Image: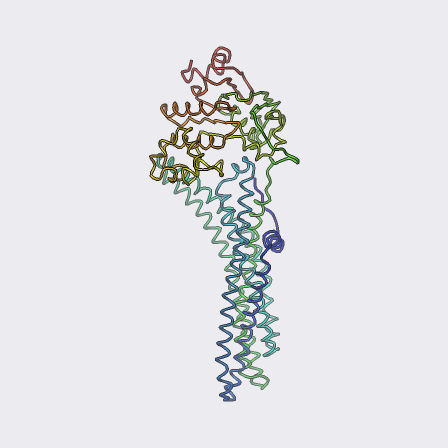
Length: 583
């Protein structure tokens, strides 16, 4: 379970700047300089208009001709400053978001396997993409509105006081009326944003799951059924988004009404001043232009709270992911695993999954000799995969110890432990990339000659040479362009290239036909020599030649022996063998 933090907008911004804003201070200062220029140029517009009316009333041509020149200068200055500020702020924010996104991805990828599998993939995608994008929007709006628009508004207010302090006071009294609805709508936006992001996560998870299982959906002709389920997900998302939009939109009439009240009051007071000779049409025109220009920044600042609340809700989910910690971690003074021979010892190992009442493994004691080939069999749910996951420290046992070469793996660096292990599983996992990249996935520094050598040992080189671009051929998503046997051989080549001391074979031939299985068995037999090899199997035909076979039942070791011994002495093994017509 990945929790969400609970920070205020200010706390969120402080953390973002403290952790990810380093190196961007100069850009921030430069952007603020340009925003001050924009605010100053904008605030001078009303003064220029007032001056223009006075010059026209005086019919002074020498003054009139200066006005267009000054306006062109102001607009050019503002345009250039606006361009530079926009580029700097967007570059700055994108750099910060890149760091946050990378940090989040790194943190989520390092989480315990059980946490990742318990969290739907779409939910993780939503945090990395959608939530981070909401943070980006909130940051850009914060810089633009809180700095540029606030400076502009302050400059315009100064112009208003310069032109007519009585009218300015009237405006200052009216606009604070918008504060209460702004705060109330902001709080509602935050809670709705949390719901929206959760629903986006659920919808993303459903879409990912549907396309990942498209083969199954098509084979069972369930496209319409999935479409109906998708419509329900999208309908729920639509409802939440509409609520968010409706809540945001609630600010528009508030700001419009407040603006209307302010302008009406200004017209009333200005009319009285002009009639009584206390003001001029030029002053009034300049003041109204300042007020109208101020509407944009004021409205932006008014809607900013909603955006900030949504961004804060997103940042809480993002930082919740960044702060998530694994239960499995390197202990202090953890050691490197060097010169590995490959003996493995399980001492009183017990493991229970948090969502189950019974133990997956119960007081397991087992010693595997260096270089030994051992198989683990048993009914589904007997604890076979759990045993392997414990060796890899995907999670730790509640009690007991696992030793490799008499060293407790809890005192070994996780990276060093896993560097000495390679696994070939029944679900061959390939990435959308070249054949070469997939073979070298476990050994990024491998040279092409080493990759090709591993492919030869895995029996993959012959078919690779027949591919359009040989080792540079794109395999497709999860190896879609390859057959099952070809994918499995690439996975075996990947394991060979890693040159592990311990090789784990998790049902490596279960999805293959008999001919492909026999070829893969021979390949696996060759690469298992002089390596400690653990094979998990349902199909007993694949492990009859193992040095020893461990029979698991309900999390306990039922019996141990070779194939002939177990046929004679183990009722469970004999039953499994008879079901598969194996003698």
